[in-house]
Image (cartoon, rainbow, N blue to C red; front, side, top):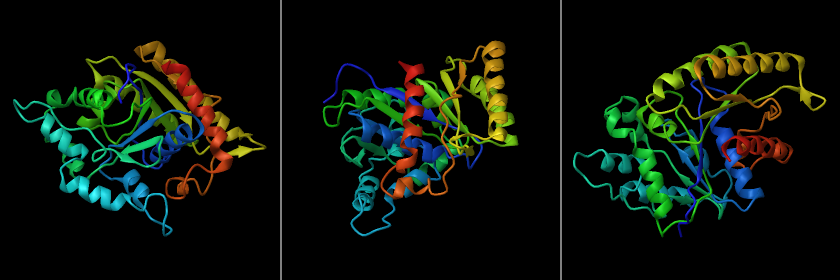
Length: 295
């Protein structure tokens, strides 16, 4: 049953592959849903479908997500996917009456729900749809979800965005509360952050650029603290965020105290049933930092 307060929205994005964008989105959503009373909705908006495939993997018989495959097939056949919502929204002269219920939203757990991706989103990457048509899509869709009496009232919505700037990315970034950018401690991180911050501002205009937060993922540590090499890259990224804020009017904040340490098995968090116990504190700290800028 929908309430009066709209959910807070966070979009995870980075145009560089391998930074852990999808895993971070999942771990943040899972941490929040597991360790608080919040209701969380998670979107996979990437045509590569990494998050969707991971949620649907059935590594062990009788696992949590064993029912996802049959639900997903029915959602596709009944035309209740994110692409079908876009298709209806962009039809000339059509009223956007796409139904919102649990045939569109999958219930992973009581507190964590999911809108999966579909292969048809690939056509959005070719920009078949018009930019002006798409700009208000996600805002309208979130409004329909918020006011639907057939789904829960969500406190937070998290988006796993594609690793490129698509029309759907534009729709999300122009209405979200926070853009979250994970980076890795390497030479390419600082240059990538600078290019990404400048690109976001140009791409989102004329909409105002939302609050942006950058944090270090896959942090190399020694004695539970970032290594000297990692600290060096963290200082570089801090300077880039400060410069972007000062010179370009971008609200870019670097979370110097909210980093996620490197763990070899972290990718199994999605298919293995949750965030590894030794990383829960990292993601709780990251979430607290996010709340500090979107409250």
